[in-house]
Image 1: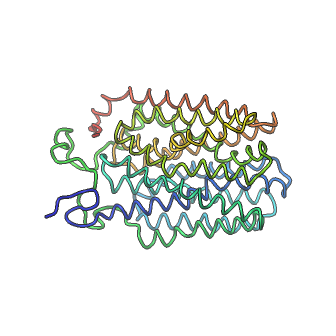
Image 2: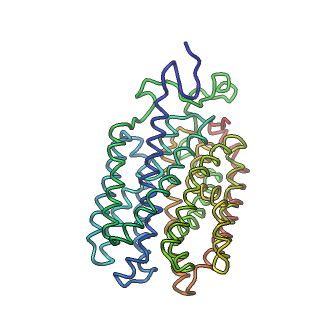
Image 3: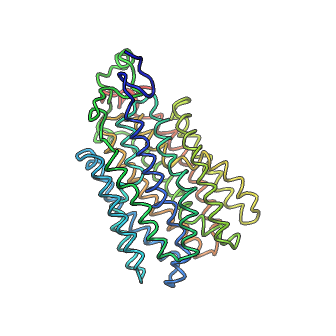
Length: 430
């Protein structure tokens, strides 16, 4: 029998790599459409409907509230039903909402549809790829596998942001919503034809990256998918510190995604220049998420959780300085290479390491709730600061300070609850 390696288990090609490609595509398509393309609509919709940015941002607020509520149970739904059917249902719902948004004539209609859409987005963006990676890859390569799946958002940003912005410029925001519905729907046949829930469904009893029998015995674990329950995790200070770190991260990251194009349109006077700069920053994720994942495996995810937010702090400092010198808009791009990977990699890798795979889908959904809270606060705070001061500069300074706080929260989380988690029956294997 041939020796197992990264691509073969028991003499067969390991199907987990196909699943990783499916996760990559969910980020390449759904995540980019939802997170990165939405900011392109601020100026045209506000101008046509005659509303302020603070008023329009409520579409994001309502959508995020429904995502927050849905995230409380979407992980359990993914655990109970086959991934392909849950993912298909979520993507279908979000695409139908985009079609209806293209016909909206008032802000309240967009708000209502955004609220419905949030239910679908809770299960159609980063949650599917985190569950796929957790189900199909062991702790030795989980960081690398997660980063490969997550870097789909960087690749997708290079394609869809420019395309959707071009549709807005040439045909208007209504046509762009139709285009977004069509792009998003590409994920439906991928889910139906390729997605398989667990390795056992394909006849694999072991995963790539699992510890050997000797390593398992040394760590005192009996099964490859070890860990504690979500209920046990909630009783630890480690969980709440990392949950708070995830929330604060998304306060800044959501404001970055929502207001970046509007800010640089104001600074440069050109929406096309702003969209190009936005695409360039997001494009670094092709390499950045991979680097963060690999480094998490090499030097430990706990260290990367402390270092990565500091790069994001540098991004916001450069954005603030860009108001007086556009040279800093170029400096932020290499900083975003690492910092921008923070929201979609570190919270989920640190959850898998700290608490294991036993109820990872449930806890991943709860971590999404932290992000949802941040998504409500960040864009709204940035919009209010703009409406009051006429500039986003103060917002970027505040968000830079918050990223330093994230670094400190992750540092604190790594120092607490060690004995408590061990007493619950789990010792992280790395």
